[in-house]
Length: 324
Picture (tube, rainbow, N blue to C red):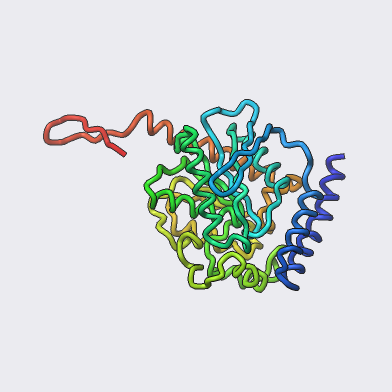
């Protein structure tokens, strides 16, 4: 039965992506895009979450809190959903967040940040920061927080890391970004090289979507909109996951080249945000890889905190503790 279900989902999946691409090419009508997203959300998502959820209030939006059975009560995943900054698929993303949190042994928080064009930039980054501040105010240590996101949410996750550092907030233990948009100016070569190959997006579609979120074209290269152009020297461990056929492939490749703490995984011929679709065998494989990355990052960080390195003063022979 599962094999039949997986085959049927595969047969529905690619045509559904092509419908989205055609809708976007014809006209970036937000109502039509949201109707398509709602239909896909219902069609591709099972009802069971494997988590108990509740709604929490943030500064300017709400968020879903995921209680994961057996998870470490002190550790949490802050996940920022994708949707080109204009749509939301709450069932699809809730299912993925609950699976990833369960695999990693974390609870989770997913903000329902304000969407464009009703709320253009910087409303979504402001809501991402508010969610991070909420977790800190609730008593979670930054070293026990994992930040993640896909597509537009990957953009928000990477921007959040830079903004937290700029505002003097402690950085999270690590971060995940799935098919992130890192360059709002769309200057990566894969935007043109994979145009017509990517089953979900086209270069022309990107150019139509961009003004909905960033009406001012001059702002597209500022770091909060394009994390690729920010300061990346002090970033925590990052795992970037992307498909080889994506328009946004080079957004991840160039980010990894600039960020010393980033690990890049390029999956052959996988579509945009493929880890979210659990009927794909590769989705399970990459999710387990993410869980291992989280576990390793948390272990290394807490080991370093428990046993800070020391320096030996050559003049006096005294041991000096290195302070962070």
